[in-house]
Image (cartoon, rainbow, N blue to C red; front, side, top):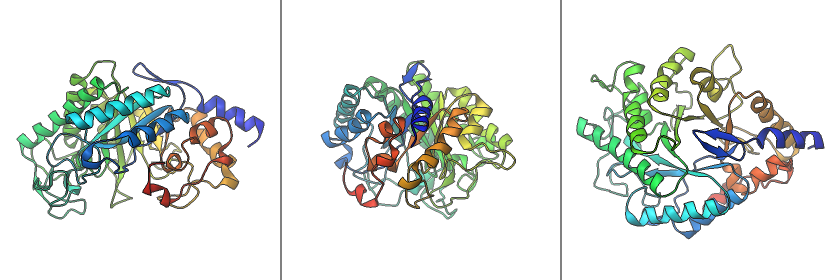
Length: 372
């Protein structure tokens, strides 16, 4: 990378950014990535050190791996961290302290997997899978359709976890509404066939997500940032669409923005692809245009192998970062979230901001076997 390109990277990526009073030192976030290194749902010292290394490496905002809310059917693994219970929350306080000691900012992602969960999976094997209509992502019967009491319990669980995050010293909270998990199952017509007020057209299907946002907003301070992550694609359907055009996207987002979302985290497989025909904006760009809210974009940044989409190689690092800088310089979106590249190299953010991405260690799936 030339000196001019390095200076441009420092100028564009190194700008501070504010989300509801939370000032990020730069425009790089760590994307949430499930790691399953928390036995019985309790994050230990190794998890704290893992996140602290990324804070020390210059990440402006860390979004933790998905963490289960306090509901029996919320999770499917004994090794994914909880966001409830004395032991787990004590572990998370240690994570926050470690990240803050390195000057970092951190928010937990809180999560309910819904009908993606199979019978007998942990952390509560006896709990039944459930979703809006008792359907899996393939549209086939799975688990049971949530009752009104089920819906109320899950909404309360999200609010309780968000309040716990604020008490633990986190800098905000992210709600996982993407990738075919529970909130997304309510948003998507394939999995939501309800005929009550939580189903029907797209506007009605947003009710569950809206009520979660409202409950979370009421449970935390007005200046505690609330981020909402969503996606068009699902784990089993990369071409799925919640919104076929900008008007439908506005129908989806407007109630959530009005309910108290401070920033939207728009998850795409390849951040550089336009979301709708006729304009070059990606999904996060459309979100910003339609809502005026802060936006995080994500999708294969910094990868050198095909894995849900190619990124760029060491040999073409300057070209790859140039594509990102072009979009960020025109403020198409506000923050770029980076996933597997940060698993590979905790110093990725510092190297990006200082024009040294050619030195970044490339991602290899073998790196997933440990917390580096």
